[in-house]
Image (cartoon, rainbow, N blue to C red):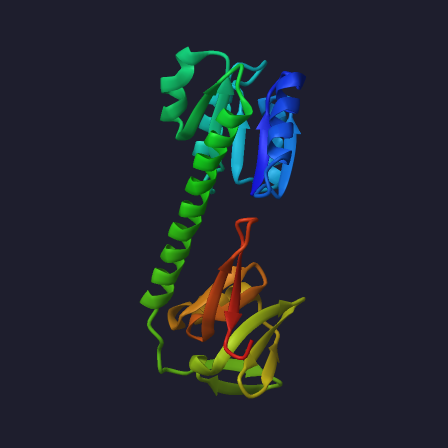
Length: 230
């Protein structure tokens, strides 16, 4: 799990970092001195848990949580760490998983982290189930598609295509028996193959969902798809 500490008090940041270093389930820990710096860091790198102070200059922890909730991306599990108990209701309204009052003990921080990590793992499983449901809902088609290559028009059965990968101004269409290099954009091919169960797992890669054997979630929030044949 990756954790981001956001607090304008250096001593508080140091105490939280020490508590995190004592755990073996924390892969990485970064710190931000205020909510603005934290938001910039969250735009660049994913985190699983956010230990967030509330009263900070310029942008409060509550306001940062509001910004994160407005984004169309998954947000970290938020634990508010503050000296002001009167913000508790507002904190939980921003989807906080716990609320720790200062001064805090290491035991109380660990308790909050356990709750946050369980929620993060649960959300990963939920996302994985949604992906699997979408894959199962895709219906394979029997019709062939026409593609132009080397002055010819070939009729290819989409069921035979494993993946399509962008290579500059071309796309490499890989079949179980051979491949074709086409002068075509990945977006145009994606639109053509969308009805046949192809999903875009990267800006330069399409994969035939019927060949997917395994989906492995990574701690970064990304997924690895393994297709038949490895």
